[in-house]
Length: 321
Image 1 (cartoon, rainbow, N blue to C red):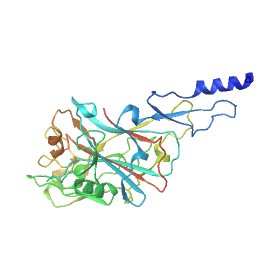
Image 2 (image 1 turned 60 degrees about the horizontal axis):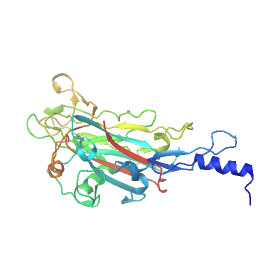
Image 3 (image 1 turned 180 degrees about the vertical axis):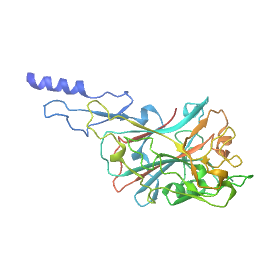
Image 4 (image 1 turned 90 degrees about the vertical axis):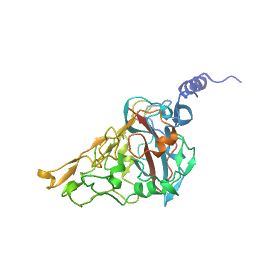
């Protein structure tokens, strides 16, 4: 039977508009047309991790439970060949991709350097400093990072004039946290202030906004203006920290935080925000995993909080730039 001409044209238009495999994109039809005009509608694309690489992480693939309606992935990141680097100094960051403007749930992404002394690395998958490796949040270092990243208060104990600085604040960097949104991706949390600086015994507490781990809503993180093309504009968030990064690392004498103080360092002191950078390296995985200076290795912790699982087109890209 002959296909009516109008129907044949419709089939042709549909085939022409459908995405093809091998494009490196994760295609979805959960979209609406931008006008009431009849037509083939719009497609939206986010990167497809199966094609573009493991540093692109589908939030729906994060299935490790760390609490009620809470999933987490802990990823070792270094400026090495496995991460597409190995030369120069690069800033750590994440980029958020997706097609739905208001997913039900919340996201937090933080980064942490290793503690002193080191804690055992227990793995869920992999065991190398590479995008596909995941630390087990149920034991060892993973359990420690889980506790820090879920919230509560992390404190920096000030260093004496000589000696090794201490405190978890020195290990902390934020990526998607602390009030950042798609319209203000570089926003930073309030300064951490304290009295008497290194000459005293004060501590500097920093509260991660929400103890349930939900700092930021996706509705704020995505550009919610209806898109006119094939994608929602991705938003980049670079890591910031209060730690002092020097050539010899974050654990140098009296260098636990980047601080400005008043006269004679006896008046109120405040922390200064700096970018979290990773030094290019060809060091072995064993050396990187044992590193405690913060310059060679950062653990990126991705958290999803919500009673509804994230749709498959929500993708977090970890990058160095």
